[in-house]
Length: 436
Image 1 (cartoon, helix red, strand yellow):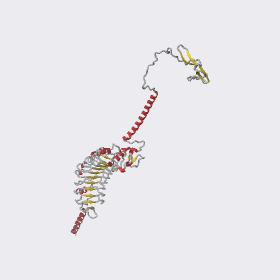
Image 2 (tube, helix red, strand yellow; image 1 turned 135 degrees about the horizontal axis):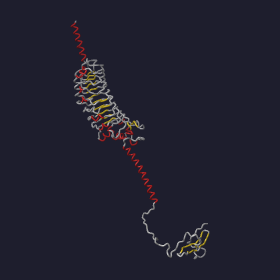
Image 3 (cartoon, helix red, strand yellow; image 1 turned 90 degrees about the vertical axis):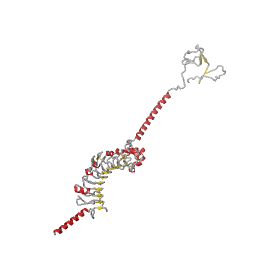
Image 4 (cartoon, helix red, strand yellow; image 1 turned 180 degrees about the vertical axis):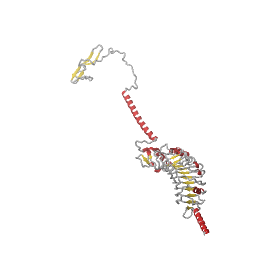
């Protein structure tokens, strides 16, 4: 019986061992035909002690389990998968990045794994990683040395979306010399100084952050092709933005996404003109709407004429054309007023000043002549008080006067020529008016 019992025990152990190593058996993981792709999601595993994986596996997913990889045995089981290239541990309560050392690992996904730090342990030194995803964690900040051990990697893509990140050291990604795609969506970032140290970056996604203007670092990225900043707090886009640099440097292959930003259209008149003249730069231009002022809220930017916008008492900021127009109008008004005053002064001067044009002053011919001429007539004194019905003709120098005979009527006094006969008077008579 003892011998028989030992045989039964050996058979049971062999059976358990063969079952434990066969993760692709019915009821186990979902495996590809050649066992190169294995999906072991939602198995409720807390450790890997009773499991063995085919050595030829290239892609392994252990999503939504209870693994922590706090045991050396579990880590070693993964390290022994020398052909593993894509590894996903999403939705496991890891708490920190496990210290794997996988020679051919190219893609690592640790989404929603309760990480509080993005620091990679030394075991990843010389790891040929090309893509890392650390979305949906509580990282809060990215420090200068978090990716230091990846300096010799060929990392191209790094995703840090929805990771509660509010601060990133400007040198945090400087060791990632091959990084060309960086995603930081749905965080609390307000600035992007780190972009200056990514010389090969071609795609940056900053959607759902707290930017109030376009990061100026976008102006110095010659390799930039895609910049996405939708759903931020960007209100003003003017000629000081990176878009002006893109235009001046003719970076026509660049594309930016800006939908769902509260754009103040009166402060962004330059941007409206930019959209109309060079629409190719803004990929989602047809979705852009005004959020302010209230009179323009909800209107599409492409439907607006910036030269006819009524912005009320709020002049467009940084709009040289508006300032120039205002100064021109004021200058014109002042010029008209000054011209009118000059014309009025000239008119009054000309009107009340005697014209002497074309004349010269001549000497008085009588300046040395005596008051009376010998033998000449002396005009009567108009101030004589004597009343005489006779008409005085002229006076000789000796003081005697000559008189003409007169004839008085009701109409006045007439001089009568005594040489005429009858009662007729000469045709040339002088009527001396008398008061009636």
